[in-house]
Length: 619
Image (tube, rainbow, N blue to C red):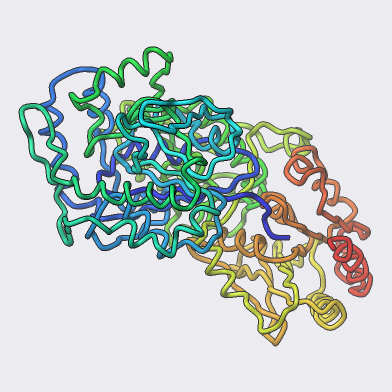
């Protein structure tokens, strides 16, 4: 089944690039039942020297004070283009002609196809006060007011049915400040055809190819009138709302300009401005709003890894373990993770930087077992010395940047049966979703020229010490089984291919020759796991051969999956933590009739009939 979660798009106007803002956006709480895709629309490359150089002299000129200190924290570090992409954000550079609301329009023209329930647009010169912006808005918990006339504000219930949300009230007008704007799909569907006109009409300042911020200083104040005509799109938008019946469906988060319970908006890049300084301070103090901002230039670093063990152990126990540790024990640290290429998506919600093994190192990892590589002489699972040396190399450049660097390796919490057979093991579990870009790419790749439903299938194989694994099924039986799927059940089949590394005992999965109703995809490279997530989001259900990897679909919310297991392994997919991920195994079927090794020649006709009953229940 496809993912039934609601979707929010967060569109960031990329110009100032304070690292802390992007990190705070990445770390916002995501409410249950929602998927969030984050985009950066860039009007200048963040790696240009001017981005780094233009703020510090002005910040020094502004003197000292609470708000000035916030500017110093905000611009303590500039994010790079590479780091933006490592955060998992979709980065696009657009023509720098007209700024402000036109960047939102440029995102709409490139990305929007009515696929999001809500769309949030924000400038990046914003100081986040906490991590509840997404959750409070989407879960209808945010304080809301209406602004029906310039001198009137009314409090409304948090569940008020709005289609447009802005930040604070702009004195003397009901026209909203558009540097923070949230709209519903209904509104944007109607707005999109005329959005380009609305966001450019009345503007006479075109800055194509300009990369400087046009600062003009009068005393200790920045003259904002230089970009005055870029305010016209906001007025055009508000006029459109009035003409289309959305003025009465518009709300604000605050009765004060530039500040809300969740953030402070910058004015041309800066939090401090002599205009309105006191009202900002009064708002924060009168509402007892704490500044929970964490300085992005952390003085402590934790490196997790290296992970070189089995994928199912990584997914089921290691990642939840270190997610919980990062969020509780290492929340004031920067965090890196070192592991195999292609798995970054599994760590993006809590890790600042994912560092994959080099191809040379990856080639030495042949015997994954539990949390390490199996040493047959010592008969134990270890982290090889070459990986520990790699970790040391990674840490060397950071010795001068951090007062403290910690290494947290797999095995600190033993991977014994007490843990792996626990109903609720230590850790934080979550569902994963693919980015919109990857999702669209995979959906295009698996298109068939027919109207059949499509099933994903992993025909798992593994060789242990030169012998066929006791969980394997005869490849000839897979062919017969797939033939039944295509010719009797009338579905398309996409086979998940994982290459078998020569001489390795790692699990793999086979593919067969493509045909009218059959496609095989080899998943490898930096997006390999995310592409598998996208495949499961895009197919009616999945079928997994006997292995621990059969747990993978449990981590993609709402997907249906059928797995063949042995009678001594099937119970491992029924623990409480797995039931929590799958709504009590609601769309999960585990066929575990046969014993280890005996499964190899078990009849494909029987497996097909069991799957057919499961498949028909989905409808």
